[in-house]
Length: 268
Length: 263
Image 1 (cartoon, each protein chain N blue to C red):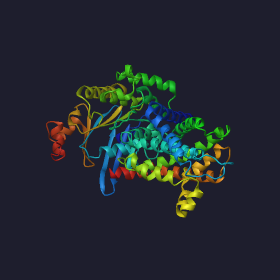
Image 2 (image 1 turned 90 degrees about the vertical axis):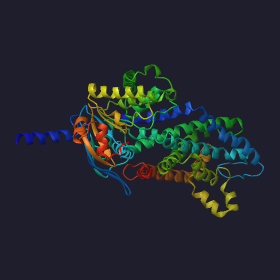
Image 3 (image 1 turned 30 degrees about the horizontal axis):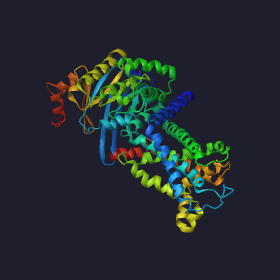
Image 4 (image 1 turned 45 degrees about the vertical axis):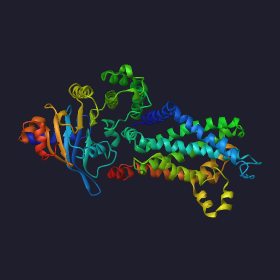
C-alpha cells in the first residue's frame, strides 16, 4: 500500500461522511436546532439569573448568550462525535463497521480517517451555528472566526476519539439514550460550557475538581479563547493529552488481537 | 522418489505467497470464547475456481470462522492464509485479495448504489476513474445499471444482495466469501445469486466459500464442508461426501453425520 492508497481511502471515508450528513436532512436540522434552542431560549431565560463577571478571554461584561456560545459549539461537536462513531456500531448492527474493517489499509489508519471525517462535518456545523448566532448578537472579532478553526479541529478530534473508544466498548444493543445519560450529559453539565467554573467552586468544591479534570471543559475553553483570538496553553495541553489517550484506547479497542471487539464477540 | 520431491515442491509452491498459492488455506484453526469452544482443529483449503459450500446449522461456528478469515479479530492457534498470506501477519496483503458478502445487509441506505460502490473502491485505494469502470462493469453483470443512482433504500432485498456481490468484486479479488447470502431472499433472487456465483467460478476462476444452513443450496458440482459444533465432520466433492456417509443424498448424509440433528 502506497501513500496514494492512504490518501484515496481517507478521502473516500470523509466524502461518505459528508454525503451521509447532507442526505439526512433531519440530522442536519437537529444538529443545528439543538444548540440554537439553548442559545435562544435557555440563555435568554438564564441571562438574569447568572451573572458573568469579567473573566478571560473576555475584556468586558458579556451577556450570558455570549458566554455559552463556545459551550454550545462544544455540544455540537460532542453530539456529532458520538453519533457518527456510534452509528458504526448501531447502523444495522455493525454492518457498516464490518465493511470498513475489511479494507486492506491498517486499522489505526481507518479509525483516524473516521475521526477526520467526523471532525470535518462537525467543523462545518460549528460554522453554520456561528453564522446564525451572529444574527443573535454573538459577534466575536472577525479574526476569531479564523483562529477558532485549529481549536475546533483539535477538540473535534479529541471528542471523536472518545466516541470511537466508546463504540468499541459498548454492547451493540444498547441505545443512544444510554450514551446520552452516561457520556454526553455528565460531560456537558460538569464542564465550563454553561457556567464559569468559579461559580461551580462556590457551590461545590468537589464538583469543581470534577469539572477541572473533564476534558470537555478544556475543549470548550480552548474554543472560547480561540474565538477571541487568544491561546489557552493549559486547555490545549489537556485536549492534546486526552486526544492521545482516547485514540490509544480506541485503537486498542479495535485491535483484532486483544481489543474489546474480541470480548464483545465472545458475549454474543 | 521423484514423485515425492515433486509433491513437496508443489506443496511449497502453493504455500508461498503469490497468485500460484491456494486462494484460501485454513490449517488447525481452533478458537474459544472463554469456556466455549467455537472452532476445533478446523482445516480445509480452496483451490482456484473451487466452489465450496460451508454447510452448518446456526451455531455451528460459521460466523466465528468468517470473523476470523475477515480479521474482525485474530485467531490464536492454527493459520489462515489467503493466497499464501497469513491474515494475522500480513493483513493488508490478505484482505486486498479477499471479497466478502456479509450476512447482515451492509449497504448504506442513505447513499445511492453508485456512492456505496465508490466508497468501497476508496477503501481499497482505487483511483476514481478505474473505480468508475469497474463499478460500471460489475453493476452491469448483476443487471442493475438502471438503478445506479437510486438510493440503496429503494432497492429490494434481492437487489441489495446483488449490489453487495458487485461491491465485493470491485477490487478484483480472486477469493470470495459469502455468509448466508440468500437469507430472506425470494426464490428468483436466490437463483440469480447461485447462478451468478457459479458463473464467476467457472469463467473467472474465482474461488468461492459459500456458507449456508440450507441443504438445498448444495449441488453435486460443488465441494462441501460439513461443519458441526465447531468441527469439520466431512469435506470433499459432494458425491464423495455422500458416498463416504453411506447415504443417498446430501441431506441424508448431513443427517447421518450430525446424528440426525439436521432438521
